[in-house]
Image (cartoon, rainbow, N blue to C red; front, side, top):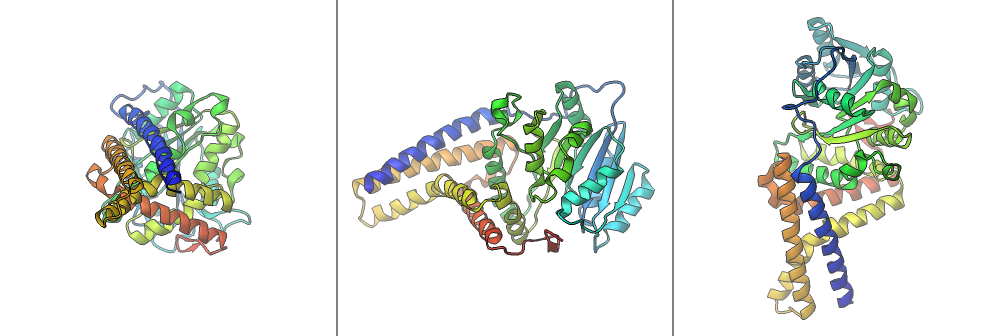
Amino acid sequence: MAAFFVNGMIFVTGILILLCIASYLEARDPPRISVDRPEPLPARVPRVSVIVPARNEEKNLPKCLTSLLEQDYPDLEIIVVDDRSTDGTGALVDAFCEKDGRVKKVTGRPLAQGWLGKSHAAHQGVQAATGEWLLFMDADTWLHPRGVSASMGHMLKNRVDMLSLYPHFVCKSFWEKVIQPAVGRMILISGPVDFVNSRKPIFRVFTMAIGQFMLFRRSVYEAVGGHEAIRDLVVEDVELSRVVKQAGYHLNFLYGTEVLHTRMYKTFTELWRGWSRSFFPAMGNHTALGILQSLLLFIFGTVPYLVMPVTAVLWIAGLGSETVRTLFWLGLFQYGLLFFTTYMVRARLGEYPEYFFTCPLGGLMVQWISVHSIYAYASNGKILWKDRDLNA
């Protein structure tokens, strides 16, 4: 049994070394959208329709819409779908429509059978859009003034069909700074960016997107069925990237921390509920697969934080056998690897590097959220979001 634990720890250490090297290579020169040196646009630019589904977003919308109206892209329309809000969202959108003719309001219809709320709202926005390109954004996001221009320049030059950006997570509370970067790192590890962006058929299994920013060539969006094709799936962003890439179109997932900013959740409760809503669907909506992925997360993301302190206590208590001492030094080395990787990635992305020391706590919280998400869905529990059942 002792040899099993030691060999297991050696195996985990080897995987962590590979992840550390991969993180270093990616963080050294990550593929990103740059606003300082954007690709030039053609003389005649295609119209971009920005679609913002909004339910009870009166606090977030002003910053989002203001950033869109400040874009330097010359042909932009902004469509806000008021998804049956019960707060002042509708009146707020009306005020922006009066202020600037580029803003259009779509009053959301009752949810059609077989649809989930956000996809249903986005679908209605597309029906009102006139652009050759479709940009889906969440109401809790805001863009750099050259964000649309830089993104379109990249897509037109590189003949990209769908682009999604990894945002800068704006975090103000303690729990945001602990959990959000940990979740972000898990997202990036689950879909290596170079594999996601590859045009080679062998890499079509690697897909990734984040719903805060998804820019489509409209012809491609319609060819794959758009939101209607994934109308009953919770993580519509990842699912759309999957159907686009499997259809043979070119997907890019880039670092957009200079371009795109979001503050998704403000409290611990919002973080817990928000990520619990997404984790299990992102694991494939399959209980066995979800348990397997959660187990792998435990082995590589939680165990390394437990072995060193547990063996240290045993050693101090006089139980420092050769196995315990070996596990302690392996655990200490794993600690060093994880802290180095965490600090390096956070520093490169500007994700609160001074909080790198909380990565053990962040890893543990992500583990518990994943377990809760699996339990909530597998037990047919009601998943509430925006004050309503996901299916309402």
